Length: 113
Image (tube, rainbow, N blue to C red):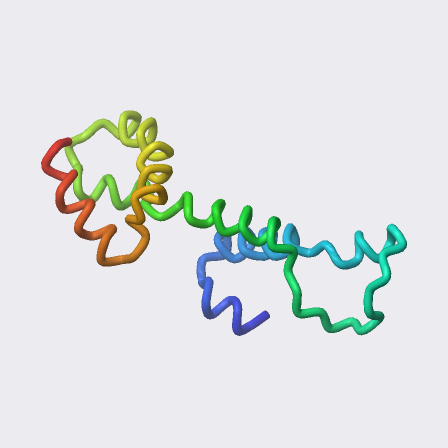
């Protein structure tokens, strides 16, 4: 766990990451339903649908409210909060998904607020 805490130093983010990892676990549930699975306690497989779902949750947080506040400090916080979900949905759709692309996007939209 110490390694993960170094990767995710924020306590709330760490707990969220643990929850996401727990949501990916399906082995014991499948075993309990009589599935013919290996008995080894070490399993290195993630159900692809669950994995894709968890990634989509994480990716929906590409752009944060704090980022919007930095590029649009004079804009009403309620307005920024109201558009944040849509911004993240379209950021994912249009592949604004790297640090560089996010920086370019924020530099451009900061003028519009």
